[in-house]
Image (cartoon, rainbow, N blue to C red; front, side, top):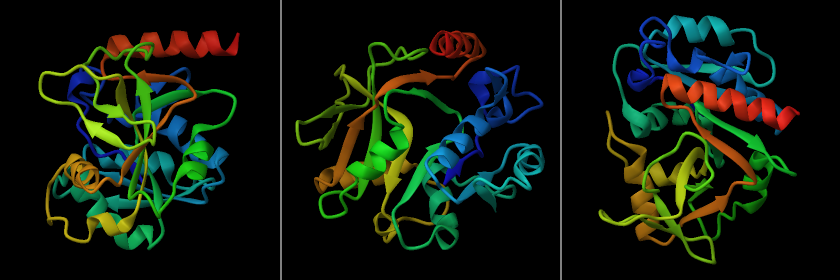
Amino acid sequence: MVLAAGFGTRMRPLTDHMPKPMVAVAGKPLIDHVLDKLAEASVARAVVNVHYLPDRIIDHVTGRARPAVTISDERDVILGTGGAVVKALPLLGAAPFFHLNADTLWIDGVQPNLVRLAQAFDPARMDVLLLLAPTAGSIGYHGKGDFVMEPSGRLIRRGEREVVPFVYAGVAILTPGVFADAPRGEFSLNAVFDRAAEAGRLHGLRIDGTWMHVGTPDAVAAAEKAFLASAA
């Protein structure tokens, strides 16, 4: 599933008349970077949710073959990152699935990170596996981090006044069962992460490569510079 319904408020004025997933970085829209990564990982079908300026995204992805795209239309109601998944579950099926933010951007290292994530996912030990980026060295990120990662890969959420070494990179594998008791309507996916963490079933995998936090117009230029450097 690819989350593409957000308003992109911090990306204004670029998003005044364009949904954030359609903002171009290094010659193609953010959502194409994500869908291309899924195609490279042999994902055959992706569910994309839409809300803000939905027709721009729908028109863009219609007809795409790899992966083929199914739209989860939320134009009439905003559901948040968690409610969006609950609505899309009938389209996603019963197996664990990739979950990506449409505006996440990264440069792979030796092995594609989606392949690494799939290989690392162990349903006997985890319900959620997050791709994590180090706060130091990630492009465009200046926050305090999200998680501490134990040697086993188990994650502990950052305390209110803590600074921790890893930030969620907007890519995960989720088990549909974690939404069994989820509320209906709008809610944040963080509630699902926290519940999995309390059960000891939230794990992480450190990214191999470079993650870019493209949250503002200034960050677009920094991301493009990183792409040019990687291609040199």
